[in-house]
Image (cartoon, rainbow over all chains, first blue to last red; front, side, top):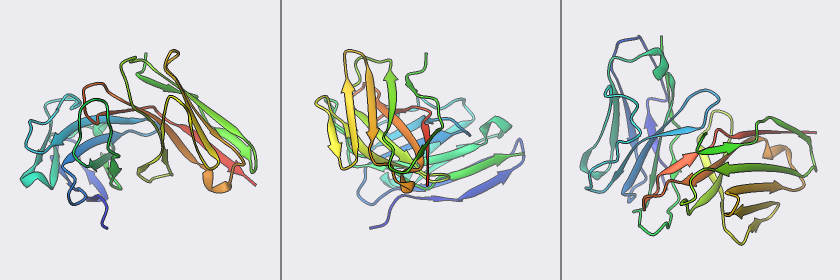
Length: 118
Length: 111
């Protein structure tokens, strides 16, 4: 079946502009995550959505970052007034419904959006 | 201190070599542990989960030492196709799938 898809694959923007990054999760996956990966760094958690629950925004680096998930499926990550330090690969992942007690459902990643802020 | 720390890379090994990667994590309440593989300019993919009893998948063996908060990955009989970055991943306690990634260890297998 289709995996996680993201668009655009590459985005070059000027400092101060707003950008929107899109993620289409795997059909039936209710959990959706955004990460970013700077050059040579590990993945940094940004935000997590699970069904209709309030999202966990604890990883968003500033109030310039926001994300929505409409209809429990597609998600959009918006970065306002982009800065050069926002340049990174933004990765989206989805998984089956999560559960408590430390159990785990595998996260499947999309190919990412490479954002370059000039 | 970083939440997940890994061996600095890169590891350059010949085909057929055995190579081991180490990782330490800081939160003793973490309960789930994984190794992910990430090829150059590609997304991470789950390689294997790590269990307290240790687990093996073909040429790959993962070990967990909860007391020392230490995770390892052993690759035997390295192949050229094993060249990639290996990410040590730990769940953040909180009852769901929030993952904390190490910066990764790069492996280059040469003929």
